Length: 243
Image (cartoon, rainbow, N blue to C red):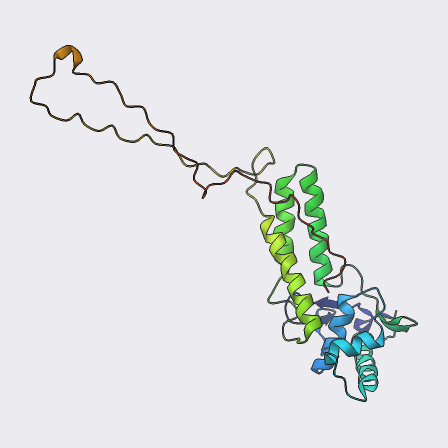
């Protein structure tokens, strides 16, 4: 890589509208089909995507006759915009087109890495640290993921990413000094009021004036206050692929 702004590796965002930056400057990603190609490659960053899969994602099974030419032109435009120094960021392999984005180059991967640290902190009993990591991870979200991209492939990816976001939100818990979740307080049980003695025609003798107290009847548990549970239990945080 050469020195200068052009040598800066790009950074990508998909947890909202698709965006790319080089040296903190936004990159023009071109028309919708070109953006869709980049989004698909980002969803499979580090693995090749065959041409037929790209065409199916971009045209939802109804491609034009020149679909291959369109994809190739989009690839060339993305290379010029994202990798003018030809650092092999986007290459053609025997298995398809491959985008070599680092683990910290895509906000979705940064999000998952933060959840991994949160999981490790939770396992060691550091709920405060785990909660901080989850909050930082959720702070990466800006809007609907892949906003503006249409088609079944992107709808499926969007739903999966939103599921990951919801799972992360459910992991937030109130930390305590002991590093455990604060249990939800149960409702305070109250005894039913003792009814006043009915007036009678005959006077009550002094030695029997003090009536025996009426015991309070037990109150059934309120379903609105369940037993405290660990929100981390049973959650799969790290799916292999969002689509």
